[in-house]
Amino acid sequence: MTGASRRIAVFGAGYIGLVTGACFAELGHRVVVRDIQPERIRLLNSGDVPFFEPGLGELIARNKERLAFTLDVQEAVADAEAVFVCVDTPPTASGDADLSRVWAVIDAVRRASHLVAVVVKSTVPVGTGARVRAALDERGLTHVGYASNPEFTAEGRAVDDFLHPDRVVIGTEDTAAAAWLADLYKPLDAPVELMDVASAEMVKLASNALLATRITFINEIATVCEATGADITRVSRAVGLDHRLGPHFLKAGLGYGGSCFPKDSRALRAMASNSGYPFQLLNAVIQVNELQPRRAVQRLKAELNGLKGRRIALLGMTFKPATDDMREAPSTVIAARLLAEGATVTCWDPMAPRTTADHAPWTSVTRHPDPLTALTDADAAILVTEWPELTELDWPTAARTMRTPLLLDGRNLLDPTPLLAAGFTHMSVGRPT
Ligand code: UGA
Image (cartoon, rainbow, N blue to C red):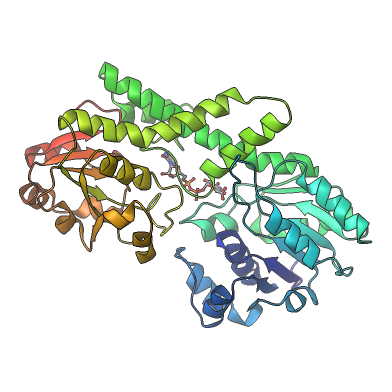
């Protein structure tokens, strides 16, 4: 069975769906990706990718013989051996995951009795798989396997993460689905963790919550470093050398953002609370993370003796570099707080979508095509996203172009020594000023 070309339907042409579809095509399988957005399908069929993800466009182009994009459920499912559910599960007002798109897919495949498996990659609360299983059974699809197969790819390196995973998690009670999936992932040569559906669903939520906790923990240590004169970059490096802890996700900054950590940590908190357990640690993580970008604004306010009438430049807008994703970006909170304090805000970002300017607070922020013009006449700058362009910037010229050369390096990206030599007042996160 190994090496056989499989026929796969992927529902959802977002980050997870497109990366999944393109990577399975790269492994030699025939993939049809289905989405409900006509514009998205039109773009994909004309050779464009609807968002930036390094390497994805090339991968899609290279595998176009094996990859199709459609709005049509039947076209996607008719020939497929498995359906991968990769739709988004956005948070409701209470923080629970909205599963309506997952259920729409289950409804769409209700007659697909030829499938080996329905495989959910979308992040869902524990117990969703059991309910989907029951729904499949009610529709007479008792012989169609169900599997939870969470995805651990990070934006900006999703293709590489998918093709070189640390582990593949397969949660299923169905032996045929387990064998089919294990075979599908075999070429990736990664450990396969086979388990029950509920545990697989929990692995995804626990992994993201633990990573969010690590970031928040190090951000809190950084705050204590500021108060005590220790240097978080030295602390993080030495802490991370302990093999029991490891070096990753110990970078202090402006708080985690993006489409996953904020949403998934709130979903896990809501799920725990709905099941009768108030997840206190996670609750604290979420609250501390929400305060982190606000704290940066407070520090700047204290340094400048107030922000009213000040001109502040934000360097970077996206939630991290190598992506155009603005979802839950700390920059949005920072811009809103600065404006609320009466500051004038300018910004620069190489990739944030132009349409960002249509939404508050960005409607009131002037965006510039390069960092130096954003910095012109500024009273202070906040380095929000660690874009490599900012390491290369001519900082002595930046100092001359600013009204007062004050930089809050929110990602500890830059070496303070040359900045100080260029005349900057340098602030960062968790390091002595
Ligand atoms: C995250 C996980 O890393 C993936 O494993 C997971 O599959 C994905 O969520 C998901 O659930 O789909 P992603 O949100 O793309 O991926 O981005 P990360 O690179 O993990 O960064 C998340 C946030 O944490 C960013 O705002 C980043 O700036 C921040 N961060 C990260 C820190 O502040 N410090 C660190 O040391 C690391």
